[in-house]
Length: 202
Image (cartoon, rainbow, N blue to C red; front, side, top):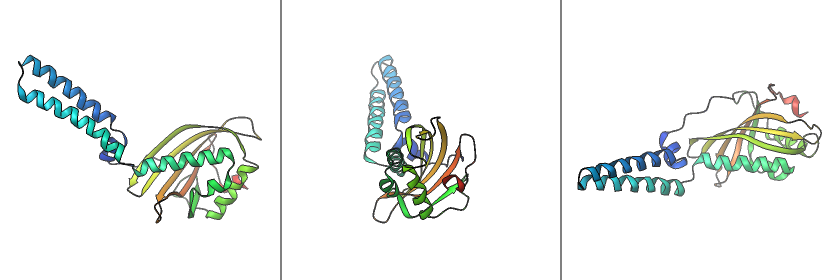
């Protein structure tokens, strides 16, 4: 799997995961409250404690109001996984932009066209029909306000092959001009410890 892209601290720990910051603020508030009691009721300490609690609450409010590109991409990816398991080729195709591409091994490798992606998806009703699937890992990263990258690892059991097959994927999800979020590029990184090539979908 490629290295995780860098994400701004504000996006990661305010908009997407406010828990660490809120926890630190609550601990600080408790320490200030203890100091307030020991000081005999110094006003400034009490006010600082309340401010910390207020900031912790504000973090959760902001996180609830803002949906990041990472969260959008996560939703699109999970929807695609569900479509693949159901063998719903039409719904799965709708998750991709019209000029989406597909690479193998590395996102930097040349990409196949949307027609290749369509033909690959059609095999979900035949050669690669899925009996069972488990999402082992899904990590999404906001690259910009209109773009995110998802690192996905799944364990799949096919109808024609009863043994579980682990595989890793990288998806680039982009906001389209009409406001929808779709996959612009997908990379099949590896399966069962092997490096895939385009012939895997022949």
